[in-house]
Length: 140
Image (cartoon, rainbow, N blue to C red; front, side):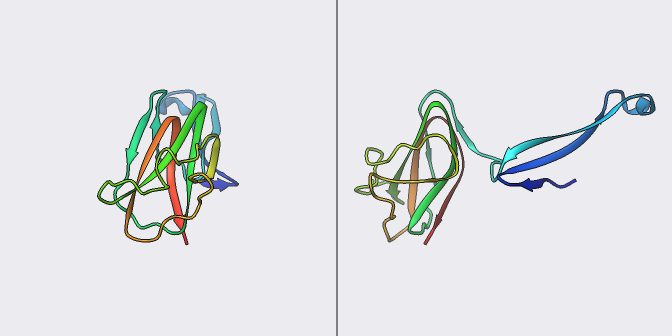
């Protein structure tokens, strides 16, 4: 059957037998399900060593959230750079507020700054350690 959404998780139900396909009448049948977090089908995962992800240029709105989770001592920082690779003042890795924990909508911040700069396309440089990221959301 199709996956079923329940609150912030997706459930995938399945059935099985404890025998071979040709001997299914004498076996036992069971049903179970597995879960994944909402919008967490495919993601970027970093190990216990620092990793970097550089996005393609994109249009963004006025704010940004990150669907992500960090492990013990894990962290994520987001930098905005021009589509040509130049750092945007006030939005560098040094300005970035560290993201940790698990949330479908971590607010991306640079100090007290939440508002994104207006203008051309930007790239995201995301540095992380012991973390998983699934999506970036932005809107006006």
